[in-house]
Length: 99
Image 1 (cartoon, helix red, strand yellow):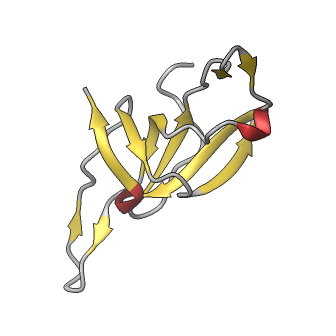
Image 2: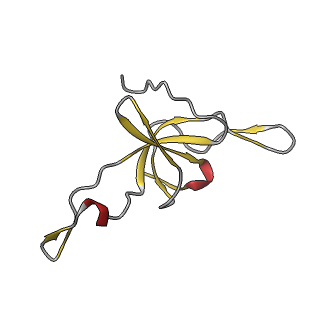
């Protein structure tokens, strides 16, 4: 089922699958899940058609499916679909593509 997603974002939105982080230890103490930093790395699973300019022209997004990206810490909206959790963000919430 790789590469096939039923969710299709609109406009300049991107659907991300957040990468799970390993357990975080500080001084030998394992931090509770609510004390951990929110992950900021994710895989792009779907992209919208692009950003629409004032003149009506559509500009394609800079990211594509499969890209690994960094995103703003508090960006987007969490969405649960088929027992998976995704993050829907606007392209301007993305910081960088990780090579």
